[in-house]
Amino acid sequence: VQWRFAIEETVGSVQHKYALKFKELVEARSEGNIEVTIYPYGTLGTSDQITELVDMGVIQFAMASPGHLGKLIPEVQVFLLHFLFSDDDEINNKVLNEDPELRETFNELYARKNLKLLSIFSEGWQVWTTKKSIQTPDDFKGVKMRVMTSPLLLAAYAAYGASPTPLPYSEVYSALQLNMIDGQENPVFAIQEMSFYEVTDWMIFARHAPFISTSVTNREFFDSLPPERQKLITGVVNELNGYILEVQKQFNRERLDLIRENKPKLKIVIELTPEQRELFRQASQPVREQFSEMTGEDGEHLLDMIETKIRALEAQDD
Ligand code: 6CS
Image (cartoon, rainbow, N blue to C red; front, side, top):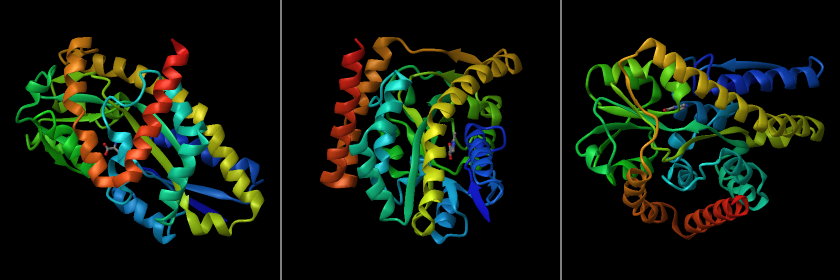
């Protein structure tokens, strides 16, 4: 049989590595009975369209990033809140993947939309690439910032005084080139492979939020599989959690060097000062209320749960 896996990024990306490893492990463990075909970004459509294809059962697997999925499942927008996650990737990973209560809550939310959540993982910190220097919230005034299409991101950047502009991934480069937008955010590896640094002058690390993605499958498809096939899938995706963390760290490190080599005059602010980050953190707090308005009590509970678990693990580490 053939299983189709669509990703929201191009060949050579973190999601592509994930899909390639998924293919390798599934094909080896099914002894040639399953063939996995990967559809890189651009072959099937935007993130929203890919999710729809999984929903309809046209394809079986896909990446569904909360940055776009929030229109369908508002609660996943908790992953888009600024200054919520830990600076320590291992802690975030633990909370996202090893916490049964959290997983149960998300499983339920995805299941309502005919999706089965497979894994939640970080692709690295979001980094701003902009045409002007942005080091305090005041600098954002009037800046047209491209955001992914989930509504919460509009609130997140409006809170800093920016003018957020939602666009699909494929339109970001030309919008920057044509000065329709003044900046965007993505992990370093994506900034490199999509060449966003070519059409911006600044690269700023505020460590305000990780880029989190989720892998999904069609729920009816999954439920109809014999138990050993279901186990094959869950076994593989569990194994991929540790793997993809290492991949993203390596990609984000190496590609920053590539960007530096290709554009020596790009101004890179590797880290805002603690005082500057604190200004952003404070300005971002009211967005939590907007998240609550979008998601009600269930969303509030989810946010509390994540915050409590992250802060508890951080306290253990100190
Ligand atoms: O910015 C975006 O829209 C996209 N960025 C990444 C790194 N992955 C998928 C997402 O759609």
